[in-house]
Length: 245
Length: 264
Image 1 (cartoon, rainbow over the protein chains, first blue to last red):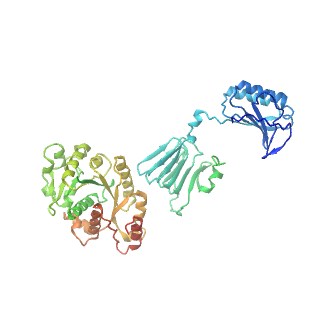
Image 2 (cartoon, rainbow over the protein chains, first blue to last red):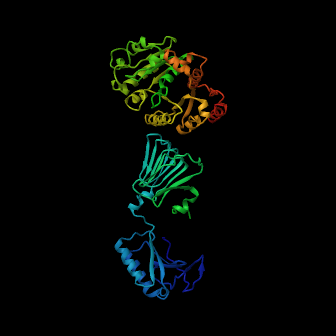
């Protein structure tokens, strides 16, 4: 994010580099604060993150109105704004949006920042706690966030979390994920043999008849409010996110 | 300095007192100096099982309240020179003593004896805390029933909370035939849930009931299967590597358990 702005000139050429062609045009003596890239999906506005916000708006205004004007006219195109390590107040964001949307064909698709506000950092999904050991009968293991237990949950024991629950071991007791009502929460166990499963407000127990002794890793999730269990292989399809690059 | 071992289970009726009496006697049989302590105040049984009821003069509460010295309250066994019992009071309840007092008594006994076997009352309340206060190690007794295993699991957790780790398991009243027919919990399954070392498996044996009623610990009879099991448990406490005995024609599963615990 802190790399010096692009200096390369293609003067309007659409030279292809790794599927991304650059609209970087007309070198200016001034430091480039806004870098505009064209990708398949539309345009990326990469905004410099270590200058004053007003300077940034100045450069953006200049690019939109003058230097890049000719590239930015035409059919409707979606714009992704990347703020780098800058965090905008609602007011600043509003000014930025208005400036870009002056160009009728530019439609803001997303505004991304590498900065995460404190509240979000401490959001329930952001914290994974690792616990080793056995949760025995009468014991309750609770964590405000995601919980990873390496060990078993025995019958009569309870494991609960405001986020997801991952058990590397046998889940024989009660597991309650998303205790504050997060319906997206899941329960993963290498050996799923629970007394009861709860996600948010939904409570479910295994069928009375024993069924097959499954030995592969499984996870439980809510599908339109109904508890379902699936093989771990399908987790990426059912609860995408947090995937590796 | 001796070692204090508490015999506990959580659930009642799984054979804590029988196990205490038999482990205590079996250790004495091995030539150890043993004192058994009954902490089940108000519901004392250990003296009855040992056949020593009529020899009691003072009890644990008397010692705690200073009415007698500890040595005065000890009842000497009628079979072994070096086996003693510190009986519980029958008239008071569990609140009559506190964990600190019991710990002081156990610590004093440990100076005199090789082993102090503490018989714990059922439950997880005051009486349990009294019993575990002075213990260095714990043995959890369970039977192959879900309820007993559940309570044993709870107790193991509570023992860990009290700082007692390395608890060992005795599975009592095992009926090999029923396990074979899948009517009783498998020993391997129990060990898998409780995840502690198995100290011994005691088969269900009519002789145990008969012996308890006669005030004679089962281990005295060398022909009973349960007796051999308890003798083996005592030897394992002393550090011998004794393989689990094969229970009747139940070689297959027992061999698996043996292998699982590295005894076989």
